Length: 470
Image 1 (tube, helix red, strand yellow):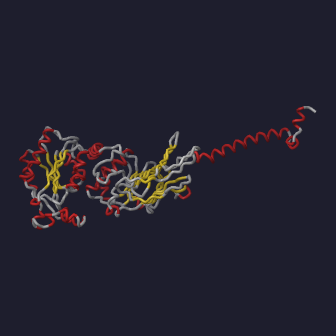
Image 2 (image 1 turned 30 degrees about the horizontal axis):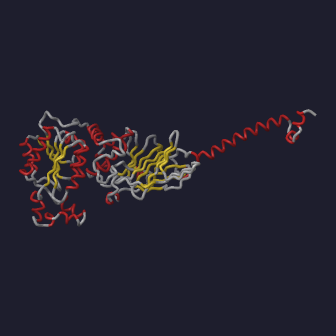
């Protein structure tokens, strides 16, 4: 018997022909290959999480921040992690992060929004043991309970694919969901709570973004229609009314406001690429404002902001005459007209003069190097004056002057007498609460400026314009 015959005389050879044996070897090779592919498929999720969702969330004390990002060459996950020498699976969890007045969530992936139930669902396919549900009110004034009571609460939730509702409307651009409740239609809060945060959040999309508005407010949309159209190429969707599921690849819930409570009318350089100079240029482009800086070859113009209700000038005519005598061309106007036309009026002036209040917010339309003069009524307004208008004016490249009236220049003296607590001790009144303080000093009080005492402020403003230096 030959060696070949001996090899063939095996258990396998007894059961199969030579042709069958070749087929069996080939089949074994295919089976081995399938086994290897199966093992790779099963093990890979543990080695590198799938790029299903990118979520960044910061919603104040007690809530969490989650960030999951898949890169081309490596995966970066914001998490608490315990990594052994063998690089065990890293599970994403939430991190506490306080960001002041805002509730803000950035979700990417398969994101579905149902308006009537106020839910934002983000799909995940991996096991997730961290916090997967957040409750948010998308308005940038989280520190003010009265404002937040007027903002609808939304649920942002991570869910398995099988739990998602069917897409009815698919969108090809990202979305921003924000509220027009809160303190909207107060001009100061319109800008510091909504307009500036909306600009810093939406500008990077160059119009290719869908606005989803909760707390429908057509008056606000009409007031800022030019600005809204400049930031988004699409009609606003009032999402609260929608019973259909809207699907996006990216959704931002909330607006990117400055994280510090006391930073008003400004952007946050720590988390925004846009400055107030960028914002003011955007306003000039939006409303076709001609003056980027004060003019030096013409007679300077001063705008006196009149008020018809509270904190009104009782002697606006005398103030205007004094300003003309000093060398100003005078414009007197009330900031309750259509915003586009009033922006042109403000931008045509070199100085804006007004009593502390929401009307002073219109300084955003002034040209660079213009001057803001704020009149402070009695009541201890110094801290509000600084926070609301003095500090922001510096970020707008404006110059700031201030005039604090005496008790005799307030109508409260005639109404209550010089020795009344309202006139004598505003601090004691403030201790009774905001309601009392507001009623006395913001609602009941008007101002009659002592012209002789006030003239040096007007002279100083004129000198600053002539010198073109701070």
